[in-house]
Image (cartoon, rainbow, N blue to C red; front, side, top):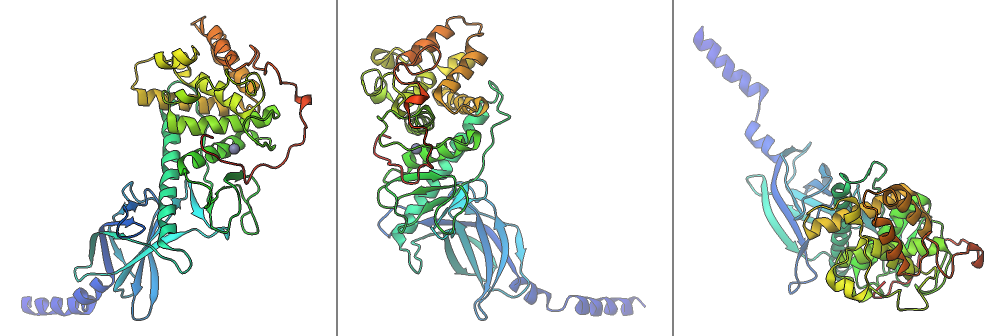
Length: 428
Ligand SMILES: [Zn+2]
């Protein structure tokens, strides 16, 4: 009896799990670690695609059938993915990793045809069915060359860094101001040789035949500094979601424009310089407004940028020698003992949150909101005068109006759609 049972069990095992070892392994794959590094050519530096979406496909090289095995919403900041064991419906002998230039939270680098660029790498599955490797390679497309892919790798990483910095700034500011109204929404960036604009741009209506939602765009010919361009256009997108950002065009940042334009552009200029120069490295432009008759007391983009920067930055001794703007947002809201890096992020987070909470569409509205809600009733009674002096150095009155040009009637009320094609020149 015992013997019969034993034989029966072997038989049953054979019936229930036939060819287990052979069949199952050909339908399995484990990606312990895979990292894609992209370079222009063998002599240039390789860069990972940081925190981007990755699709993992299984491929049968005989039939060319391809199965989506898994989507990783974001690889890590080194461009690495890893998975549990994956099972495929049919036998596969190759694996394909498809890296996008972006992710769902942030947005993607796209073409004029609204196509999400992606970089693919296919490799044979080894006998142990485990992938554990770093691949450094140049990516070519049917129409796009390795140089283009290496550029959009850098662009994707710059965008990711700006996005992360902004989120971190809000987190750091959260203990000191109510950030409940602050949120982030994804927006794509067009990067395409066929796009004919002079610089960077934001357009609320999209662009061309294929893109009908708000979009950022960068010229492939004229943009050298991705950090400056993306930080500027990203700032427009965030402000647009708050106040609809009344549009309007401008020729240069020195022109007198209506206060809607000077605020939206001044904000974008401030954000770009804040991101690249921080609290203490904007010395070259510290006294830009007070020394220039075209800017002082005028509704220009640079005037508003100067006033916002003077609210944000700290009056370090070397800044003080150039321009003595006593108020800084960190001292007004925190007055603590953070590292310089944290002071920078907290200050940015507070400025950004004030932009959101105030729903301002002119500098005067921003200033009035700050003054009425946080400064004029502050325990430190000196702050009111300090804020007035700081903006006063830019020729702005104590009520936030421009000393020489605040009357909206002085300007054409023509609100144009801005600004796909705004000029981004060095220093903007
Ligand atoms: Zn702009």
